[in-house]
Length: 269
Image 1 (cartoon, helix red, strand yellow):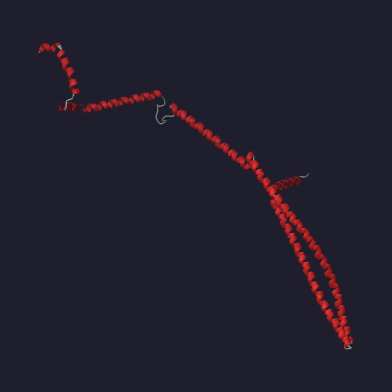
Image 2 (image 1 turned 90 degrees about the horizontal axis):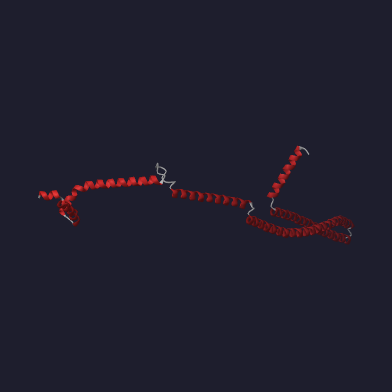
């Protein structure tokens, strides 16, 4: 086999496979049925044409027979009038008409036979077309049911092309979801352990550093509070003299007891 023959064979095989995939049996059956209907229509037109020709011949025969009868009547009257020459002429014309009538009758018989044949063929073809139509509809319904059942089975088994794509998409979504869940769980664990505290601050990644910073902040608060108390201290005596209370008296009593107990003080008095 030559290279060109091999290429041609491969091309025809691939083209045949492509046509098989593209062909829909239902469309093919409908097309065949339409072709049969066209053929049946042509046969009917043929029957109608033959019947029309037969009817035309029949009318011509009737007209010629009327003329022949008229010539016969004229020949008889010519004989009665002793006009043999006229009678001979009338009979001569009648003889010509008789020959035409016989030819037309022969054509009429042929046309009648052809019409009967075409009518019978039309009836047979029509019966075949009707039978084909019934079988066509049955095959189409069966094919449609089989196609639907195949799609259902493929969908249920997941082997269809579309269902396969859907299955892959679902698998990818599940994988991404699991990955995000694992990532979120890992981030939660890192946050709980303190490993993901404020990354913009330096040296704040362990518990000791945070505790030292908290103590330093508390010391600063105490210093600031003492400073504020020192600013407000000169105003406290005036407030005590204006409105002495029990707590101030209690604060002064220990000083008196301490003064009385000192021996140097008694000698001086």
